Length: 346
Image 1: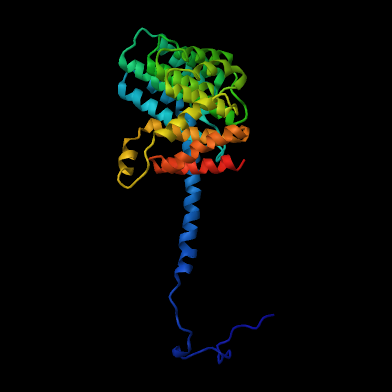
Image 2: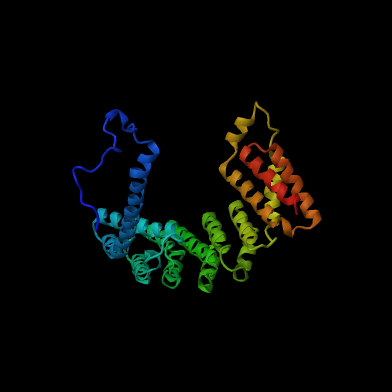
């Protein structure tokens, strides 16, 4: 049994003089961080994840309300519904590969309802500017859905020549974004009807539509798109030719190389020598389209360089080297220098 406490217990070992007590030191910043800040951050992270999953679940449940708002006769409700649904779909795309769970963008019912709504609007006799704007918005929104069987038929209908130009363009770009994601997943988008409709658009009188269709065709399987893309390589519009060449480059084909070489040769021969007196003026005067064309062509020839024969490699390298030294835009000169290293490293 333990000894009971007694007032006569020997306390001689305990310090009785206050001066003998150990000094009291203020807590260090490290101690405060460990005691308060770190647990606070952990709690905040847990609450943040909980709120995020709650928001995602709410978006999954509320899409019907958003769609109902989009169908409303009230302009403000339509705008609120359209914006809410677009944000939910965009959030789905941004969180892929990070969080799992139900997604609006892969919900077959969402795709079915939105596609049916667009089909209804396309066949409506009411084609006011506001209605056409909503059609254009819906076509782009469908591009954020990954349910091809539901959305591709109505996107084909939206490309019809009788539709507004903006609606047709957005339908083409929607197909391109769907095809791009499918390709990234390793499941290429295969749809002969879409290839046929894009080929029809590629023959349109409007250069913007031909250029957009060339871009979209390049994201579809090569065996189905070679013929229309070959025609587009000789198009009268420079952007269309370049998009067709980029499409072939994406498919690891040299068919578009003459287009790239033409862009690079013009850039190499048409630029003035860089000097302090004219550098700023030259950079300001260069058009954005020209800069993008040269940058995209440099990137393409760099990727294709393993396929070059010695004669082609030497000829391309000469133009790229000239661009790296003389082009007016510093960013392009740097791109050219990097491309030259890649070409000569083969």
